[in-house]
Image (cartoon, rainbow, N blue to C red; front, side):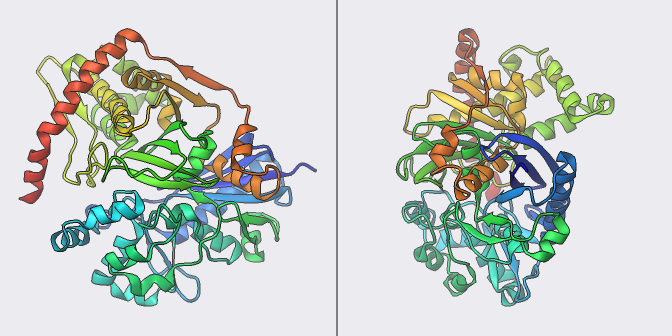
Length: 508
């Protein structure tokens, strides 16, 4: 009887279950959508119960789709959206809806801290290597302590998304180094930082956090109740897993120093693998540890595919009405985009649509999206092309700010399915672009970690090296590369010129 690996990936609003061979080849996947809640402006929450229910549904449907039984799953690997706050009570039940990484409510706390301690953010960066985002766990806890103390009084444990799913499967409580080091935590120690708990004044809640264990460690087995719900066999091993960024890097084959990959989802994360923690440039980007001993220097555009979805909603209602699927819709949109020439007729779009602003190439919560250069002669094709180009140029920005040469970029995520966008990234960045075959790279990274735990490979590097899936390669077109170098220069000037305007608008 064949034995398979189950990879689970709980994203911001979609939970995916994917099936892999023991060697890491993807066989199929099922996705279930969860409801993203915005109870107040800049808040982002999800029901913890719904996240588990959709995971249960995805697993059951995957087994049925693939025609296998739960006892054919040899081990389970899990990844999920990172940080935020997933609180459970003494009985293991949710205290409240989970607060997600994209939540902005803690900005009031950060502003207060920065007024009291002007070097507040720099001290966090010096310890964690990361610009702390509003949705990180420790500032969210501080917000709860100040504004919703009853929730923390009920809480017995603070988890991250994947750890909540593992708890439901196994009854075990733990966190892995990829999560613990970005709460914020310690990049060098690859775990919690007492100094960060004290700086943010949440040290009294330190006991709520579970122990940290290696990502590829088996932490428990599927229990009877979870088995009855999911169809998995009682006793199936489950690993600690890793956050979605490190897991996705593993899934696309980026584990060796010098390899770059961009993960194109709600966020655009531009990641470079390094052999030691990188703290340059100061106060820019995020530093993750990755299983296997290396680190990921990442720069982030926190409004990635959000910009595309917004633009399609605003400018493409006829195409939406005619399309029978999302794939057909974007085929039509890209045909429209290509009616505009490279450079979008002089229109430039700064893709800073998130209420959180930007974290790279500068950290500025007041930054906002802008169109520049419009005249009455421009069409919606020009505006749409400017959005695509602005996003591709944000990837260039992300790598240009890292003080290490990048010659080749691996892409994954929804936007990587577009040959047009992949070529645009090559032209805008001037780098060769590689797109591995497959679709569920977060789940694949979790599955490869599980394969290591199961003894299929001695370590993560060996697991990645054994992958032989074909890739697509895109090389820069010299003429378009030169044109986009000029556009990028204007794009940079525009961002710099608008910086004081954004700040003034926010202070009103």
